[in-house]
Image (cartoon, rainbow, N blue to C red; front, side, top):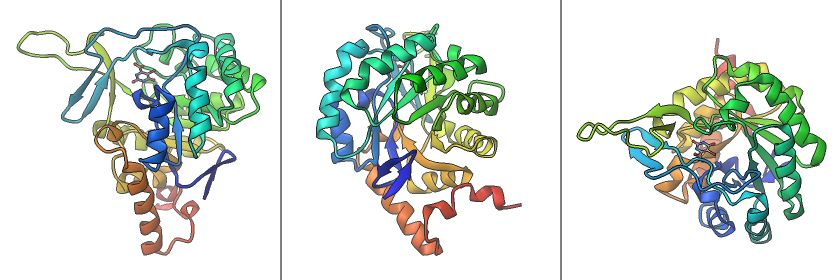
Length: 301
Ligand code: RRO
């Protein structure tokens, strides 16, 4: 068992917020068939949103480019799904939420409390959501205020998911910590774009979006490495992890646990595989505990 911000996880792998977190049934499937240690919902906001026009997610050689556009049924519309996930999943269920200001974040968190999520993840980092997302997450004062506003109304752990699309992610992580965050999650997607050269059109309906998958892993490793030294609270690493080796690398940069997003679309059971791979690695190298390798790369001078 791993303990992360007070939550008990059977392994340190977590489903990242995304499309597979849209329904209670899909969250339960990732927990049951995939072996995830915990699951995070798709981000839920204050009002229903249909999202951006299609194509909203395209596969590139190096990962996925998406501009889903925060599609969600709003917190009243999601309550039943969250209740289903909580009643049928054997692992912690974390509610990812977004808003445009501290009051909206608090409203959404309060609105979902009756379903008893095990933690909240504050999404202040979507790269292509006007007024939401990175507009909030690149402003340290707003990040601190949003975090404090949610901490005021809930008594479960609060994680804050950070954007890599800033000059110095440490200042944003520090703001989240000052607001009372129990952990930070790094990283959300990196701003990106692809163009179809036959037609000349950008491939996404929204023209630009966020890049995830293999291409962003070194960016995520560097962000986690920097946050680890700047913060006291745990850093949860996410970005391009598709094997246990990737997970160990992220842990050595400073991650206390990892989230997996893009790789799930190829194999849902990747969580069990990564969990077992980490265990086997620790045993082969003679480490008694995962804590022995969290941030290990910082000691290698
Ligand atoms: O829904 C999205 O378009 C989306 C979100 Br909320 C996010 O946080 N990150 C992302 O790449 N896409």
